[in-house]
Image 1 (spheres, one colour):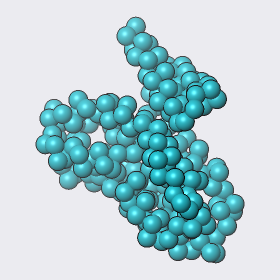
Image 2 (cartoon, one colour; image 1 turned 120 degrees about the vertical axis):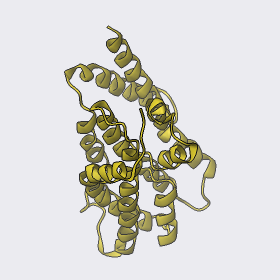
Image 3 (cartoon, helix red, strand yellow; image 1 turned 60 degrees about the vertical axis):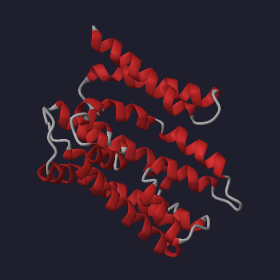
Length: 226
């Protein structure tokens, strides 16, 4: 049974707030460095509003130059965000009974963080899919506001002082807790990490994102069947 209520959305927003706070500081750093590479305030905020994906936005900023290498940016962000294919597939059964407009709106706000929170609640028996959308909207506002603030204050902030190189991995580590179900997850995660590292070393582009995810998923599926 699947439900979708405003109460579920409020629950999602409440559950996500610790990650939204950390995401806000991450977004501030994104705003600062986007200003440093020549993005206007509107460009930085629009990017956060429509792309709404930290790792791929960092990649865009790294590639930002005149003229813009649009094809390279598109291929890079597609590779990085390809993990969304697996995340979307994991919630298909849950969202299948819902009207399409609710599904598509929820998928727009899909991120690693609110997916992890929603999946965790689903495993505990929650049926309200509004958790995903409510948590995603809360993250979106935090992310967009943080980007805008970081860009506006960019002249007064030092990216090194913000420890930007630490923020991204720290942000993803925070998301491990909601989806941790026990020690049996260690092997799939190690396989995923090893697959991603090896693919990053030997396969061009951003294929390591998909290869790591598929490798870990396969091992997790095999263990579950036993």
